[in-house]
Image (cartoon, rainbow, N blue to C red):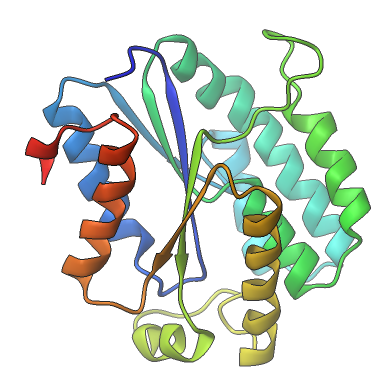
Length: 219
């Protein structure tokens, strides 16, 4: 078991089953004596949660969305993620920057070069080398077809402005995730989220057992 902090993000469209497995993974790490910080994006701090409400509910163009999301991310990194990692905690985050590339870049069609610039600007940490851009140690991508995700979400809750988008939007989002997965294959773990809950959990567990971060006894 590595003694240092771990930063793990969970990605995927709504309905992919992230939340269930985030909670289960948190329990697995805690069972092995690790301190776990559970958080989410947009959000994670009082300021970022206010910005989340605006992003999810208010009409705005893609650039405004991206700027608000990255503003929330900066506060989240400064107030929650970096301090938790400095304390050698395990940070489990429901979405991070890959979601911005998938939703604003893929779904909205916003300029990827601008997103790359904002990523470098916001995620460069002064606590480490000036060229270090904070990324998750592992990103677990729950890959699910938009059609199946829509079936799972039907009637579950009142949709926000993203959840209310048509299937074509989510097809573009999925393509955005795939592009990020291919560009950052070293940190991505792609999970087939169309399987049973038990099979998905087994695949998630295997990712962290293979890295030596969880023991086989955590199964």
